[in-house]
Length: 342
Length: 274
Image 1: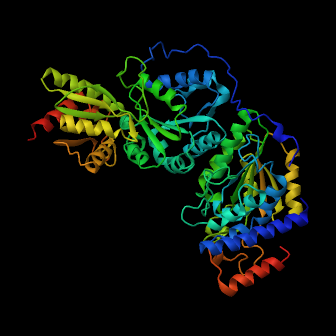
Image 2: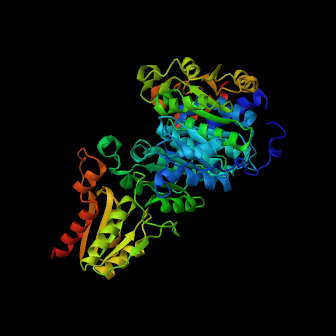
């Protein structure tokens, strides 16, 4: 042992604030409400105040806009190339030294290729790694099954000590990123395509683990998450014009579920429809069903709506959403089916 | 610590492994015996650690890729004062901190949990990056098995370590020649290990992993090594070293000695030069 190493300061320095550069617009587009486009910017802002933030990606810095972070904090950005397993475990190593790493790649690769690293290296040691799976669900459309992540909710929901959050829109992402900084343990953050339309006109006050009630109603409750919140809310508004009052819950934390909100919905509205952009096997709907049955609070109507247990056909995202009735019109029709199914 | 004293510590690692295996009813004898000298040299001479301050941010880090050899590490940590030696008696019993693979949340002195082969070098890359970002000059050590090198993630990590110029990262390869099903070169040839690490941008030092003088010399030579390159110490070892019936035998990756066999092997270890 050398003599003087213990004299080194134990103050966690992180990295120096290099100053926030002007935000760059993307081809003149107003990017303020586009989740993927605010990902890097918002983290860069957080990093100005918080030396723990580091960002990693696996050759997708353009896609997830980690490059906006890298432009401001280049010393805190690590591109690990096309090697997702290594990226996630490197993030875990960084977390063990005091950093809060955000490791971002396509959801299909984060949750499927990196599943074991997410469990064994992040969740099991309870390290504050935030694995960010973007372009989730069918949002990569005609890229096909290799690029779809219909299983990631089911996979991550079944990992202990892993908090699973599905991001709703840009302002919600801002809130989630900030709330995540001091949230204990590992998290999986599921982002949509990055073009999800606005649900929250300003940054919402959130508490991870607590669902947000977006609209009240007495006839039925839609419990939605991530990319399906917007069309669910739009569907509820359309139904309202037809005299059907639907409650809409943004269940953005998929694990752990906000059980109180689920039980209250069953008790006060009778029917429950869960909506998710993912395989309905072991997804949000399964979690909600578990809560209801275990508590013997049985809804009068119940349906898990999402992607059936099949590989989806080729098509652009909008076409696939219509095909699986995950767009506004589709959700309206599903609600009507449920209410007429007596 | 003198070489003679380190030799006794290596013997202690082996005999404690025997004792703890008896508690569990099964254990990885031979995987520990191949790296007993490496662990002794690291923990009793090389590592910059303070058992009274196990979380010191400037400490050297040690990540055990071959986590199944943790049974040989736990007694070392107890011996150094990280926890009371009597706690080892709970080894593998229900609720014990000490399982077959090490858990950083439960055991003081364990820098990272392990068990699934192929992860530790990536952990080391992250810890080394974190140290550099934070301005610390600690070294990060990852102990890997030669069979473990068949895991693809090892080479993802090796690539990233040289890409980021992590000169404070050291991979110690316990080249004990065997994995579970047989000789590594027959199951899946992971060599030439030295040439492969060199091709991935690492500086490689090859030593006899049971020769404590050579091991210590290799560790000390790191101060003069190329600071822009991650360092690989390729330690040629013998799986099961020190017990005749176990040396280069595929029958002892997991085993349990009972009765006269236990006594005979304990005597062999106590009397042997290794």
